[in-house]
Amino acid sequence: MQRWSARSHFVDAFRACENALGGLSRPLVMVMDQPESAWIEVSAEDLLSEVVPSAGEWLTDGFIMFDPVTSSLVSVDVEEGAGVTFIESTIIGRGFGALRQCFEQFGPEPLQIWA
Image (cartoon, rainbow, N blue to C red; front, side, top):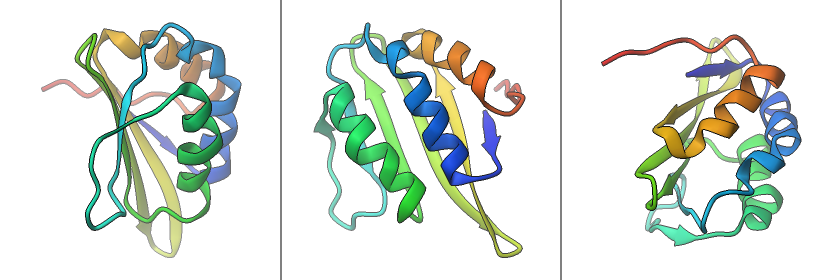
């Protein structure tokens, strides 16, 4: 898990890691802010032009991205505390390994979470 101190930092890092998404099939995304949200299949372009910027601009809950081929997911949780809004991103599974490595270059120090 990584805690991004600014939404814009998360969005910039995700865009910088665009190449890490190249090996994915079309992942499924659920936007948690939508009352009747459902899983939708997206392309990397949709993710970078629509979903990720939304997390930086207006989402209050976040989104989940799931790769069914590798049973891996990315959880993007928008949090507010003490008047400050930040993003926590959690990557689970090997399917997003390249994204995890890229985030480690551009983002805050990852917090290791073991179940």
